Amino acid sequence: MERRLRSEDVVGSSSKTWTCTVAGKAGGEEAGLFASELAEMFKAYAKEFREMRVSSGEDADQEASGTGEGTVSGTFKFQLTGNDVYRNFHHEIGVHKVQRVPVTDAAGKMQTSTAVFTMMPVLDPVAVNVHESDCKIDFVRGSGPGGQGMQSSSNCVVLTHKPTGISVKCHQSRSALGNKELALQMVAQQILAQKVREQHSSLHAAWSSQWSSGERSDKMRTYNYPQNRVTDHRLGKDYSLSTFMERGSGLVGLHDEFNDINDREQLCSVLLKHIKNEFGSTV
Image 1 (cartoon, one colour):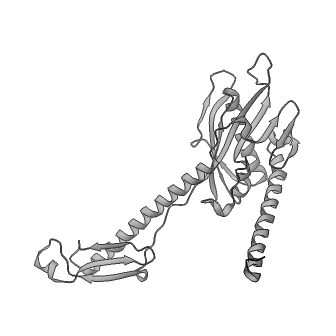
Image 2: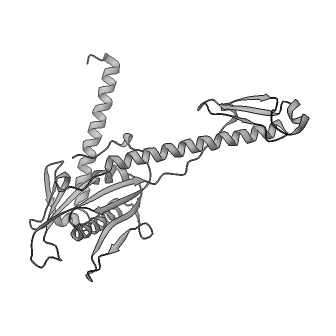
């Protein structure tokens, strides 16, 4: 199942820093081992071939399997920072399937396991600037406590932020100027809270679009060790397994091909939109 998303549909797609996760799914300990190998492949590829900065350690969630063989199981997280992180790595979102004899299987029986790759942007802190020129400011008589002076003078401020429609009333201060400054701060706080909620909602939607149960039938790529072959099921092409698992060099050509396809699709979309604007919807 194709899980690629267009950049313009994804929150934070222009972000420089992304948190990537590779999680073992079907296959138990072998799935965890495969997930760790994929994580190392992605990190080597990002650093060596895409000039990205790779961060791990504090963000990693990885566990020793307890086998004494140095194998690992679980989920592996790392951060990538650089240009075009999403452009290249969103092609990896989905289920990766491996076919091989596990090193822990004394019987030498072939096993099929899966791991799932997801990525989320590290968004910049939300910044809010409320300009007085964007606000409608009315000075009215105060109605709160504070004595006769507070209630008889027009020092209460009703401030409406025109772009968002957020309106606040402030009469904490005895001066109109003080209330105006407080009202601007109150509006900024409400806009900030709204933007943070929108970010969280967008991130949840982005994560939901990538979620997969990791079923073997849902694979987007298969790594067949006995035949030294990687098959990308979206392109219908086979590649050398060793070029993928050793430093990830095989991903260079694969990602470039996907990017070329995406660029052509976007160009066609722009041209079609231009033609419709020029000649009408009958085209």
